[in-house]
Image (cartoon, rainbow over all chains, first blue to last red; front, side, top):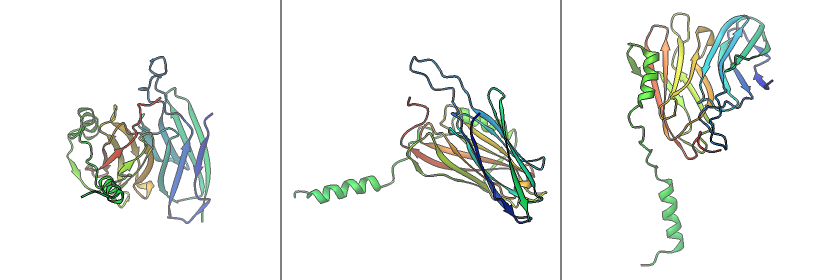
Length: 106
Length: 150
């Protein structure tokens, strides 16, 4: 399983806009590189990322091979209610990885 | 007149510091990039403005170039950014990413790191909730390209 890192403030004020940072370890193989025998290395990237906040989608990204290895994404959302942020990455094989983070709104 | 060592070094430093001519290989938006942009736009009109790209003007390594794209928008229920699309026109494949946001984002700003095959123009297009499309772009000079080595 690739390792994912998430940074979310532990506590935010209601109505505040806060930043969410995510990183997942992945080679993001482009499909245009060749190995040392000259054969193309098949493409293998994370092509989709979704973030939901208490079940509602707040951010989604379709990614292409031009995203650097270990895809890093930063985005924002508005604090509404305490609850859970769920992050899901999907690769070219359809494999998904899910991470969760708690958020407390005061 | 003989030049002193100090004068020679001074001239070299000056020469390096003067703005490098950006390589204009991909002067016009490449055909691939034009097609990728067309796929997003459809028949809509693309206007310049509202979108800003924050990237280094010179990047040492094309394998990982930081990118922050932001759109000037109040991000309310009736006036917000629906999506942001990023294109690198001189890459083998011009699509970089599509970001889908909504009023829940609060701020229309996304950061990531991208690969650049060569020095080129990066274009970002924002689709707004009123159906209009806005674009912004920036030039990045790469001294070591992605996709080649190894």
